[in-house]
Amino acid sequence: MKQLDSIQKRLLAEIADLHSVPEGAFNIRANGESAARASTANIEIVPKPEGNGIDIRIAPNTKNESVHIPVVLTKTGLKEVVYNDFYIGENADVTIVAGCGIDNCGPKDAEHDGIHRFYVGKGARIRYVEKHYGSGDGSGKRILNPGTEVYMEENSTAEMEMVQIKGVDDTTRTTTAELAAGAKLVVRERLMTHGEQRAISVYVVHLNGKGASADVVSRSVARDRSFQKFDAKIVGSAPCSGHTECDSIIMDEGRILAVPGLEANHVDAALVHEAAIGKIAGEQLTKLMTLGLTEQEAEEQIINGFLS
Image (cartoon, rainbow, N blue to C red; front, side):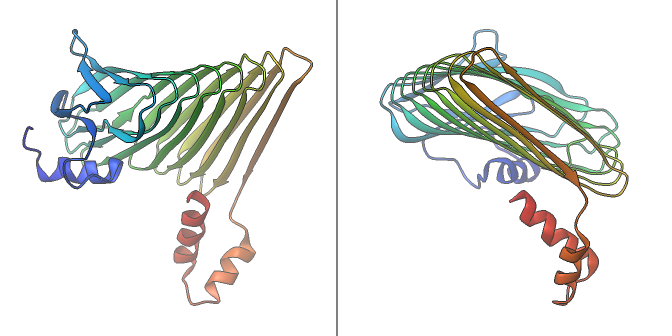
C-alpha cells in the first residue's frame, strides 16, 4: 500500500468513512494511480489491461461482504476518466462504497469522471453508496462527472445512495437503468450547492419486465447563486410501477429546474412523478429561534434535517 498524506486520509474519511485499511475487498485510487488493493475469496478486483479502471467480480451467493472503491485527487490540473465494471453473481447480497474527494489548492481545474457499470444477477441485491466532496482554497475548479449504468436481471434489487453536500464546483451525474421482470431499483439523491456551483442530475430508467419497479427521489438545497437541474425519466414498457420525486429548498439567488418525465408503453404501467420547490417556511425558523437559536443556526438545523 502506498503511503497516503494527511489530506488524502481526510478525503477518504469524508467520502467513505475510512480511517484505516478497510476489511474485505477494496481498491483505493489516489492521483490517478492505485494506492492499495485487496480481493477476498468471494470478491475479486482485477485492473483493466488498459490501466483505466477495474473489474469487480462478486461470486454467486456471496453474503454480508463489502467492497470499497474510493478515489482521491490532490493534484491541481489532474483530469482522469475511470471505468469500473461490477459483475454481481446470482443471489449475492453485498454493499459497495464508492465516491470521490478532490482537494484543489492550485490554479488549474481538477476533474474525475467515473463510469460505473453494474451487472446485477438474478435474485441479487446490492446497496451502493456514492459520496462526492470537494475542498481546497485554489482558484481551480473541483469537477466530478459520474456516470452509472445498471443492468438488472430478474428479481434483483439495487439500492443506491448518491450524496454531494459540499465543495464540488461542477458536476453532471448521469444514471441509466434497465430492469427485467421483478427487479427493484431505489435511488436516494441528496445534494447541496452554494456559491457559483452547478449540478446536473439525469436519470433514465427503463422498466422492461413484469413487476419491475423504480423509486427515484432527490432532495436538494440550492444556496447563493448556484444552479441545479433534476431531469428524471421513467419508461414503463410492461406491467410495472415507477415513481420519481424532486423536493428542493431554494435560498438566496439560487436556481432550480425540475424536469420530471414519464413514458408509458403498456396499459398496466403505473407511473407517478412529483416535484416541489420552495423556500424555508417562516414558521419553522420562528419556532427554532424561540428555542434560542439564531436565524442562521435555525436555517442550518432545518437544512441538516431536510438532507438527512
